[in-house]
Image 1 (tube, one colour):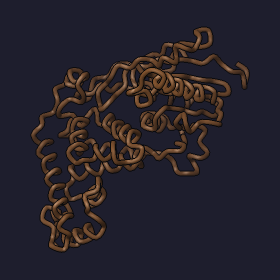
Image 2 (cartoon, one colour):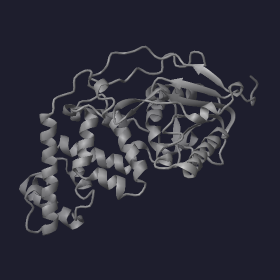
Image 3 (cartoon, one colour):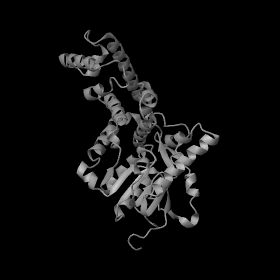
Image 4 (cartoon, one colour):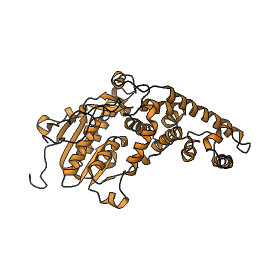
Length: 374
């Protein structure tokens, strides 16, 4: 086609969120002009970021922190590090008062001095704080240590899931003994889940980011906590670009809300599925006129996303998507059916060959042959 000539929008169905991300990375690598990858929630960016990094495609994440820079992700990883490495004082200091436990800076400083004098970790010192630590803080620190020790015992006592546990648990949640299951127990027993959902700003968005972290844990068992953290450390070392490189990148990642008023040669709208577009939280507990209004607003969001494209538009949806490490069947967005058939191309994307499962996961290999037929 001639430069500047618009193409018919493409609707692409993919096997799962990993295949979707690999496809998007391939598209971005091949596209000659500027590209925007748009999504409904910030948590959706992680899989795309991972595949772009693997493909060597530079990108800029607009109006959002990098996934591992988000507070809720850093907090959750600090809890996991403290369980894997009880002497990690940095992790202890990050979460000792998150959620609030009346353990302020002065209490932490006194605990730090006590640990240094006794040659122990801060976690060990928190089990029996010195009289210099205020009584309320000392009581709460003891309860905090109780919760950590209970989680240590739970992880040690829970066997690894059977090879088919992910399939058997698909309707119930993460398989018992999986890393995603253990992460949920950590958030629950430390009070962080309650804090994040109900006492923090943007609780729903923050919870989705934690859920995405659980999806990264999907291939691991709870007993492999150290392996999981080591793998994440490698990923974080490779994560993102410096500010100048990011600003110059021709591929931009952002939510649909952040894209208003911008235009790009190619726009890829990811996650065009029921529950994402329209989003579950936007329509939940609504009926009648209120529900219709909410759906209309979600439809307008997709319209905003689609009209950011100057020349080419791709709408992707996954047949399954991980939720707390469990693959869930997804339905294509109702809004896709509203696009006339003569104004869209429904293209078959070749799935990569099936690879042997790692432990009990349903992860697949990526990218090879993903653009066949496109």
